Image 1: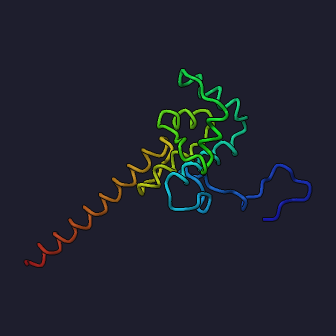
Image 2: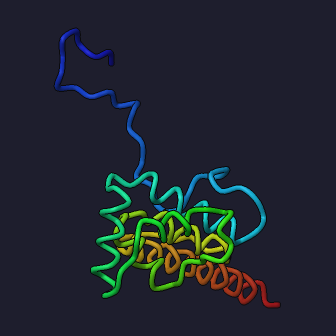
Image 3: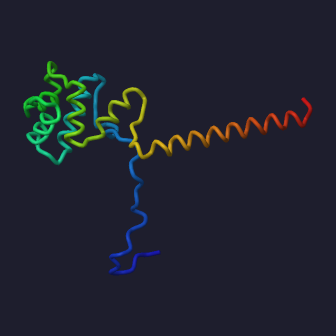
Length: 152
């Protein structure tokens, strides 16, 4: 049905997009095969896509960690050329917290062939697994009943 002229209350139903289920960067956002390079790129994207300044991110990380993280340190983590500056796990966690960039979590999970999904989807995933198992059991039960009835 066409949207009525001047109708500002009816949204475009075809423009609806489902919520992203798994977090992570888009394919092609991180280039190369070296893990160190890809980590630097992920850090750089998290900093770039954050609404906060690097100074604010550094302050938040410092407060969270209990010691000072400088903007220069963040710049070094985001630079592929600074091979001597690698982000530690605790600082990586503080970076996720400060930037709100959960795509960083998906980046790590993807390396191991996993997807990182919000906790609210965990019960739905488990329910799906149970339903699949029920279908397998029902099919096995039906096969055994057929075998029994046929006398084999």
